[in-house]
Length: 332
Image (tube, rainbow, N blue to C red):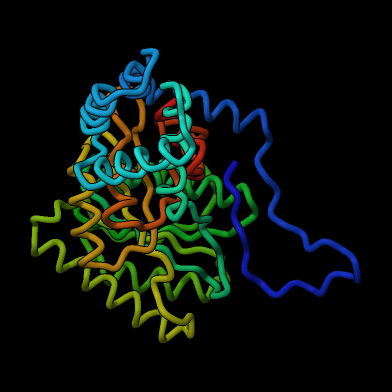
C-alpha cells in the first residue's frame, strides 16, 4: 500500500510523545511487491550478475560490466560515473572478490538513485491539483486509475478530470475507474482540454476534494502543437488555482513513462520537463522486457523524483519507489 502524507497542521504532541507518521505498508505485502519487481528485472539482473561470476577483479571484469550496464539502458553518462566511482571505492575499501565489488556497485547505485526517492504529498492546498502527462501507450490513464484507488483507499476524496477529450476510450476508461472507486469525474466529449481542466479545479475546490487528478491526451514530444496545448492547459490550471486561492497550480506535474522504451524514456523526460516543469515521474511496465537501467540515466542527467514504479496491470503492481530496493532488484 502506498504511503501518503497530508500536510495539515496537527495538534502539538504531549511532552515526550512521538509525532505520528503515516503507517508503513505491511511487510508481507511489500515483500510480495519486491518479488514481482525482481522477477520483472530478472533478465537484466542475470546479465549483470554473470559479470561477477569469476574469482578475481581485473580489467576484463570492468569491461564486461561496462557492456552489461550499457545493455541495461543505463546510458553512457551514468555508466561512466558508476564505473569511475566503483574503481575508486574498490581501491579505498581494498575489495578482493567480485562479490564484494558487486556489493559496492549496489551501494553506489543506491546513492545515485536516492535523490529520486520522494513521497507524494497532499496539501496544504485543498485540493492538491495533479496534472498527469505521457505518450500514448505508456500507461498514463491506468496509472491515474491506480492512484485514484490507493488515494481513495487512504481516505482521500478524489475528483478526476478527463481532459483527454480526443479519445473516447480514454474518457470511458477513466469513468470506469471513477465508478469503481466511487469518486467524481468531470468529463466533456469533444470539449476543450483546458476548459475541462479549469472546470475540474473549480469543482474540486467547491466540493471540498482533497485531490484533483487531471488526465491529459497522450502525445509525442515531437508533436509541437500538442506540446503547446499541454502548456496552455497548465496556464489555465494556474489561473483556476489563482481564482480558487489554491496557490501555485498545478501542485504536481507528473510524467508517466514506459520502462520498456529504454533511452527514449530519458528523451521524454527532458522534453516534458522543458515544456511543463515536471515534479515527479511514474515508471510503468518494469516487467519482462524492461531493462530498468534508464532510471540510473534519469538520476544522472535529469534527477526528477520517481514517485511510483509499476510492474504490471494489477492494482498492487504499482508501488512507491525505493532506491535500495530497486538497486538490489537490478544488481542482486
